[in-house]
Length: 127
Image 1: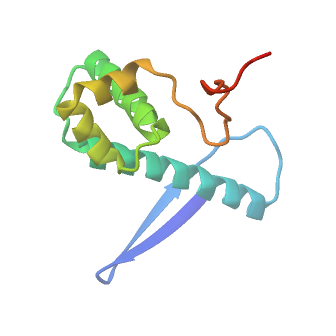
Image 2: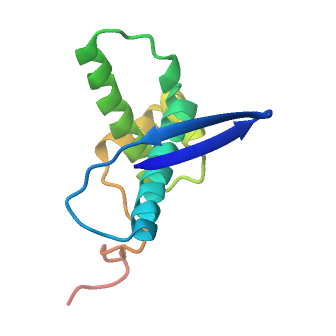
């Protein structure tokens, strides 16, 4: 059980969350894991809301809602892996305006940080 307290404008709210786990661990280690999980979740949902305005989505059909969520996650992943020096929201806008950039996002494999370029320059022989 995790109890969190939050104070906003003098008003205190308390929320209790229950977790089920199969491993025994110390309270401090468990708390660290829970905070880490929520940090990742909050960061993901913040990105989805800012770049895709996910909270404003008015789709009510459960299957359609789930399908759109999968597409937004896929699009966010492609935008994050793109090396262009723009924010997520600006990359999304650029993809809407620039068909070549959109094609790059959709069809090219992103080069990850630390991956070396394995292509051979034109002026180097491969003998």
